[in-house]
Length: 99
Image (cartoon, rainbow, N blue to C red; front, side, top):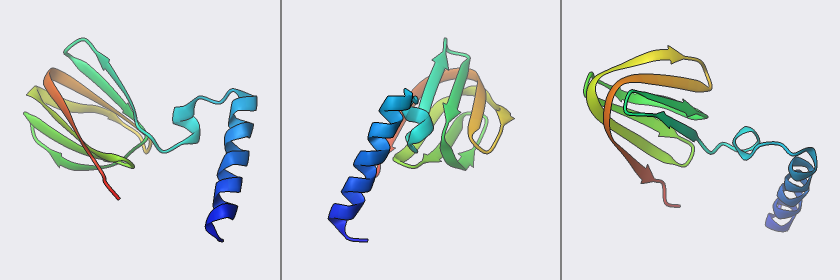
């Protein structure tokens, strides 16, 4: 498929998403990150867990790598799409992918 055809198809899908009022995180691969205080973090649309330690977690997403630092961190709940992290979260860092 040539580049103009891809753009037309993406534009058409985008119009349909807007018409149906679909949330962007559902229709794209972009992660949605919800932080609740300093003790919980929900990550939706993640790809893989790269590293997991009690004080450091690295998560791969479709647009980059998410680094989470803290203490007593646990992967509380995991599904194929969502990840719930608990513990004392001190910092969040994002490494974007450049093409």
